[in-house]
Amino acid sequence: MTWLRSGLFSLALLVVTPPFAVLSLFTAPLPRHARYRFISGWSVIMLWLLRHLCGVSWSVEGRRHLPSRPAVILAKHQSAWETLAFQSIFPPQVHVLKRELLWIPFFGWGLALMSPIAIDRARGLAALRQIARRGKERLEQGFWVVIFPEGTRVAPGKKRKYQLGGAWLAAHAGAPVVPVAHNAGRAWPKNSFLKHPVKITVRIGPAIESAGRDPNAVNAQAEAWIEAQQKTLDS
Image (cartoon, rainbow, N blue to C red; front, side, top):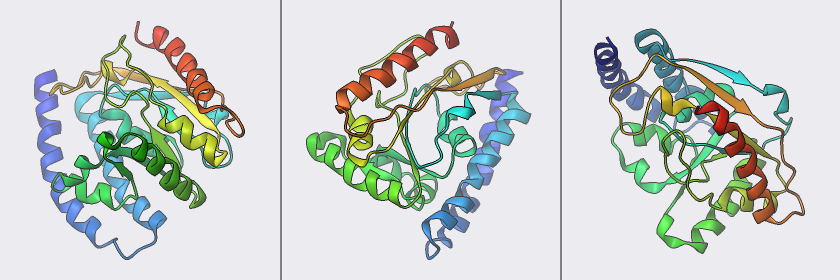
């Protein structure tokens, strides 16, 4: 049944995405937030399909920790699921992502219209400065900024080095950092066709103030909280 349900989801994805991407192009003249509201509807559809076709459900803990002003979200990255679900869980947001994603037909078109911070990872310090500059602009425009500090998806129970970009942005913009842990990799593993009928838990931690602090200290504090939560979520 998991194979069948996953196949139906993939078919629905192929049917829904191209026409939605074409419609999204017509939002180009609209303000950024108006474009976001329309285009994020695609993720709502995908989440509905995952729930009803594949049995993937989810719950959120710690919403009370969300600050009242735009923040930088530092989150675990295990699956494609969180890139969809965060649009329903958190206020309007932009993602820091590798620029190659914008080149994907249909999907990349809509992504480009959502004001992402697309970087060339090979540029090192220049990419870090780009995150700080454009991220501050997005925060001032009322968007939250989502960054996966490990840079790529990791399997449950695994971890990679936490990169400094998100904490650097937060400290330079004076924005709070919101650490987020989850176990979405149990439902939709990296590069997997199968979507398993699992209830995902998203856990939001207390906001970390970054103004006037060393970005390395902010990054280490966020990493420590996330990884402590992952020990229980991934078990």
